Each structure stands twice: as structure tokens, then as C-alpha cells.
Length: 417
Image 1 (cartoon, helix red, strand yellow):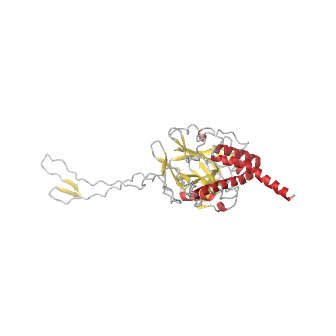
Image 2: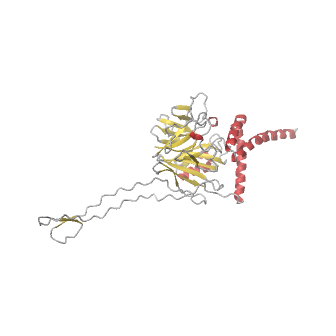
Image 3: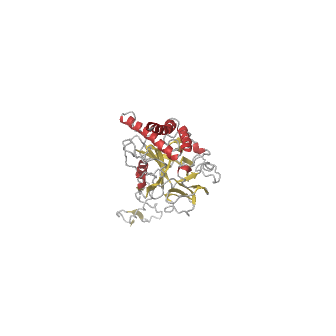
């Protein structure tokens, strides 16, 4: 009798694993199929059960990756060729030396005084004037660039910001770099993008389906035609979790799909184009003049420090991960203390702590997690021909133009001002 019970228990555990393992293993080859399959399983088995099974697969994948690294079969690699940013020092214009000014010959024969600045009188008829103080020169404009980051690993070029996105005149509006934030996983290389918010503008689009609310008005899920223009559109990137994974608040262009929740991390875009990341009800005043806002769990970084909840076992905080050391493809968004630099962070095999460490290293004052898992984490730069170029070319290649047409999931995009 006891053996039969154990067999039933084993079978009940084995069946879901056999169902879900192929789905998540497929994400390495066909991320879109794996992502859609996972959604179907969540509908059938429930979010928490599927999350537990995800953990089994993610840990197995991470174990294989660790073993391959230890055996020398896998080596950390930079996601792109890094190049140092030119010196950002202000070069003042040097004052030109004063030159003597001579009067033309006097036709009357009477010598006129000659003005010589800063000279010693040599002859009669010379009027000496004191040398005027030079006018303080105007410094040449300083190109914007974030400060280099301290390397955390061994890759050449780590922490150096490389010019990434430009306006039509060639001015750099965004830089990118990479870090190895997890000493236990040196192969987990994280990409960071820094936007100059004084010259760029962030936008948020509700997907045509997600975040889902059957009572919400219909929306197109499309970038407005006025922004879908070469030279204006700079980048697009993923939004947050589906509604069923937290019911985190979301609003754009006057359409509130899900109401905000107090004390949750919120990214707010105001009518004047400014951006603020903070807790709803404290840093984010509910009575603000908003264009859009999006919540996605607690803040990861609060006032320049890691949120202690990162280290707690709180599945509903961080996307139903069973514990917060679960390695998966993650993304996040953060902002500097002066509100002038916006950071996007994404990378594979990333724990919540690694995400937090990456944001902190970049100089984030407040930051929050966005979507997770393969396929859903997606960032592309938009070139002069409206062609998308993936930030991580090994992970973000499926349907890179997904946000350039009406899309079912919510997302962000960045334009020139």
C-alpha cells in the first residue's frame, strides 16, 4: 500500500515535469515557442506550479552552464566590441595674446599718439595703456557621457561606456556598457544602456491585450505615426509582467488598465516629459500630471541602496520565482538621482541580486524590475532606416521588429526630443 502511494506521488510530480521540461528546454532554440508554451501551461497548471517547475529547469540549465565553464568549454564573452569613450574634460578656449595697434601716418606731419598695450615707453609720442584683463573664455560644450564603471569581472572593456544611439546630427544620446556582476556566474554578462533624458523622451505603450483587463477600453498597441519616424525613434524595449502575475498598475494616454497599488515600485512619465521612478504614494504623488505609469513589484533600488526584500523568499515580489537566486534572463529600469539619466539593464542567468548590483554599479538612485525570461526580455536600437538591431544579438533576435507594429504586450520606446 505504501509503495503504491509513493508511486502515485512520484507520478504526480513526474507528469508536470515531463510536460514542462520540453517547453523550457525549447527556449534555447525557439524562445517564442517556449514562451507561448509556458503561458499555456500556466493556464492549465497555475502560475505557482509552473514557476516551481521553471525553477527546476532554470537550475538545471545553470548547472550545465557552470559545469561547461569549469571545464573550459564556455568562456565569458563581451556582447559587443567595447571602445573607450573619449575624454570628457572641458577644454577652455585659450585667450589670444594682445597685439599692438598702430595708427596710420598723420598727413599733417604731427605725430599722433600710438596705443601700445602693456609696453614700456620707448619714444616720445607713445601713450601707454594698461593691459586689460582677458575676458573669461566660454568653455566648449562638454559631450554628455556617464562615468566609467568599476569592472566586476575580467572582460576587456567592462564598464566602459561606448557611444550607442545618436540623433540625426550625430550627437550621442545613449551609451552602453556591460558588466559581470555575479562572481559565481562570470559567464552571465549583463548589458546596460544609459539614456540622456535631457535630449531624449521615454514613452509607454499599452499592449492590445496585456496588461489584461476585460473591462478596460480597447487600445491599438501601436507606436503613434508621429514617433515611428527614422531619426526620431531611437529604441524599443519590453514592459513588465502580465496582469495575472501581480495585477500591477498600468496607465497610458488616459487609459487605466489596472489601478495602482500603494507602496509599489512605479515608473511615471509626466506631461512635461520628465520621468520618475519611486514608490506609489510616497515619491510618486497619485495626483501628478501623468502621461503614463507602470508598476512591476517593489523597487529593486531605493535611494541608492539595494532593497532588503531582494534577499527574502517572496515569490510574488519578483515574478513568482521560488527564491530570489533563481537565474534567468531578467530586465530592469532605473534612474539617476538628478533624473537626467535613465538606465535599461538586461542579461542572462541573472539573479535578483545580480540585477540590483548592476543597477547600483551604474549609479541608479531608484530602480525596478521589468519582464523576465527568454523571449520576453527584448531591447533593440532603431537605425536610420527603421531597422531594429538587438542589444544582445545572441538572445534578442526573434521578431526584433515586434514593437514596430501593433503588439499584444506592453512596451516602452525612446525618441529624440
